Amino acid sequence: MNYLKMAWRNTLRNRARSLITMASVFLAIFLALITRSMQIGSYDNMINNIVGAFTGNIQVHKSGYWDEKIIDNVFSYNDRLVNYIKSIDNVSAIAPRVETFALASYGNKTKGVMVNGIDPDAEDKFSKLKSKLVKGEYLNNDQEGVLLGSSLAENLKLSVGDSIVILGQGYHGSSAAGLYAVIGIVKFPSPDLDKRLMYMPIKYAQEYCSLDNQITTLALKLEDDKNNHQVKEQILSRFNNSDIEVMDWRELTPELAQQIEADNGQGIIMLAILYLIVAFGIFGTLIMMINERVREFGVMLAIGMRHYKIVTLVFFETLIIGFVGVVVGVLFSLPIIAYFHNNPYQYTGEMAKIMEQYGMEPVMPFAFESGFFLSQAITVFIIIVIMLIIPVISIARLKTIKALRA
Figure 1 (cartoon, rainbow, N blue to C red):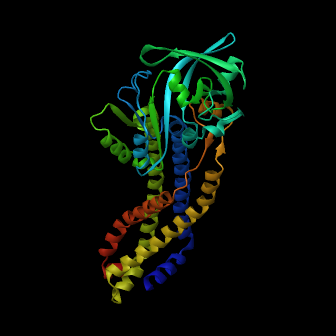
Figure 2 (cartoon, helix red, strand yellow):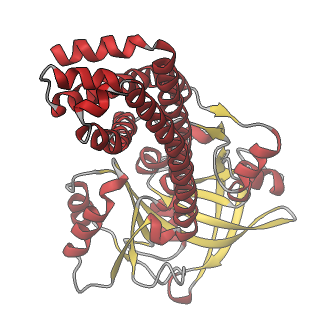
Figure 3 (cartoon, helix red, strand yellow):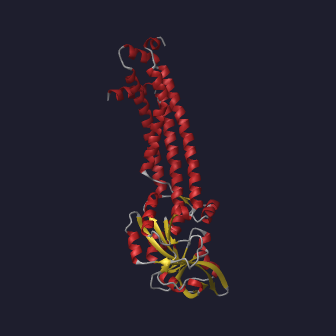
């Protein structure tokens, strides 16, 4: 406590210098938290929009399906499989799907579509499909109807209540054809998906494709994507020596994973430059502080104070300056991050159109993670300790007579 009291008083002796150093630490922490929160939030938005809504964090399918997406590459779907996957920790939702391509027709209009056979309740829990409904009603397992993307419905000039014909290829080369009532229209942020997606209950999709109790994919949503490797290994161990393939979203969408890694690398480099500037600022302050107080340190040594006690005192002084800067930086950034975490910034104009074309919702949410604040604070304190090395060495080598003559 005596060291802390003396350190605090010494910090207040030269208020201008202490405030400038605190301000540099504050600015570094403030900018680091804001920019990293924006970056991590944008990554989460990409993953939630592209991975969470379609491929899933992990996907189970027949070996070879991802390279050749044909209706013949299917596997059996049963309660035993579902119950086993549900029992795995970290799995929050599973969505069985039958995915195939077909030709959709209404009147004299024809469009290529992607038919998705889904379990309506499971799919809503997985991708919140029901929230995208803009007209009509949502699917149920016992109703032989379809949902269409709003752009697809507009291109075909049909609406709720009309009937649509779809033609395609079924299992093992059989022909597939069906006439279905349009019971709802859904709106997707991605224009490309909005003009080609069609949903129907999975049992009618299996009937349309002449499948028994088989599906093309089983998409899994995880509570924490950081542990997806463990979940993947558990599923693979269950299906060892079978023709089932388990892939995570980084394997399913390598372009997205590479984009995130590249952008994250740029962000880390920018943070490193920012912290390097702060490090030199702290280092300069310490050198000035020691040079100004050489005679003072000499007097302390002359009356019997040990070198290590002076070093400890300087350490606490620097720690106080860094601590105040970090706390103020966190306190100022916290409400901004919390606000934009709960109220994401909405893009408009050309930027919104570009994001929609990539299948992402045009928003900029901020990430809010307690560990993130802690890691930035620890980084600053590590920088402070490193910057103390040279001043500490100079104090340890200080000679009493030379210091008194300074």
